[in-house]
Image 1: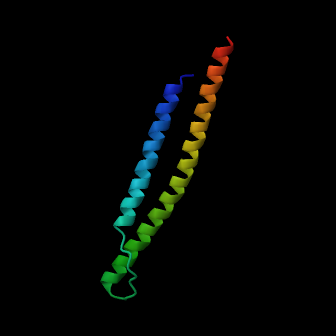
Image 2: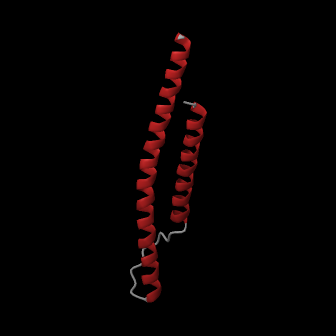
Image 3: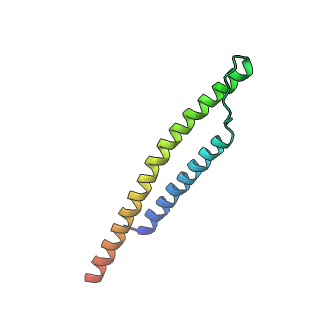
Length: 92
């Protein structure tokens, strides 16, 4: 098996992970961090937007957590493949 192909796939996974972190940061930066307790239409719209943003952030946090674990495990597997192939070629 070619290690370069696995490194390219892992690089793409890392790029997806970075894009996901940047998207989460983008959503968090555009969120209103003030507490709105009024009952008028503007405050209700802001509250609905904050609820939607918090749901997106929760989903992105789960995705980032699992994708980080996948990338780390994949890198460990690539290191294992590379060391095994180096070990078998050295013994021949």
